[in-house]
Amino acid sequence: MSTIVVLVGPPGSGKGTQAKVLCERYGLAHLSTGDMLRAAKAAGTLEPEYRKLMDEGGLLPDAAVIGLIERRTKDADCGSGFLLDGFPRTVPQAEALEAMLALRGLVLSAVVQLDVARGLLEERLIHRRTDKRSGQIYHLLYNPPPPELLKDPGSLEHRKDDQPEAVNTRLDAYDSMTAALLPYYEERGLLRRIDGVGKPEEVTGRVVASLDTVK
Ligand code: AMP
Image 1 (cartoon, rainbow, N blue to C red):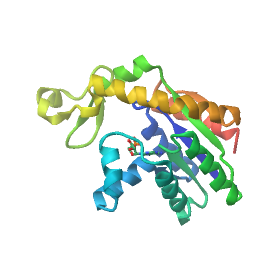
Image 2: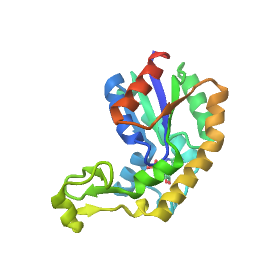
Image 3: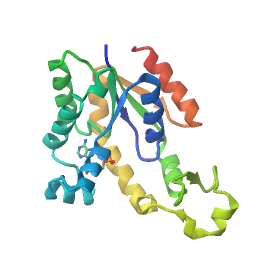
Image 4: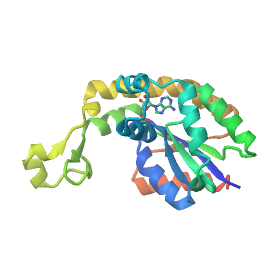
C-alpha cells in the first residue's frame, strides 16, 4: 500500500524541513508544485501567462497544476508513495486528487497540518536571516548568526518576502487558502493537526507518531 501524504503549513512553520525528513524516513518522493513550477520557469518551458501569475503571487488555474501532479505521480520514484507539498491548494484540486488516486486504486493516507500561532510565524519570518554563502538559516534572537556574520551585514540576506508587510500578505493568503481546504479534509477524517512549535526533531516526532497510526 502506497503512503500518500499531503503536508500543509503556513510560511515559517518548518514545512520544508519536515518534508525532507519525512520523505527520507518513509521513502516518499517529495512533490512540491512550487518547486516544479519554478524549475519549469527557469527552463523556459512555463507558459508566459503562468509565469506572470507566479510573479504576481497569484494561483495558477487548477487544471494546470492538476495536470502537473497527474503526470509527475506516474514516475517510478512515486511507486512506493509520495508527499505533496503546496498541492492541493483549493477544494477542486483536492477533489481532482481524490479522483485521480481512486482511478489508480489508491487513497490518501493523511493530511498533516503544521499548526503554529500566527504571532509566532510573524516573529520567526521577520527575524529570519540567511547566510548568503552557505544558505544556512538563522533567527536573530533564537539561533543568532556567528559574530563574524553579524559584523558584516552584507553577508546575511533578509528575504524580500520576509519583510513585515510581505509576511502579513503571505500569512493572509495561507489563511484564505486553508479556510475551505482543511474543513474538506477534516470531514473526511484525514486531517492530523500537529503542534509545529518546538525543535524540528520534536515536531518530526509528533508527525511520525501520528502517521504511524495510519500506516
Ligand atoms: P509555493 O512555492 O508552493 O508557494 O508556490 C509558488 C507559486 O507557484 C505560487 O505562488 C503559485 O503561483 C504557484 N503554485 C504552486 N502550487 C500551486 C497550486 N497548487 N495551485 C495553484 N498555483 C500553485
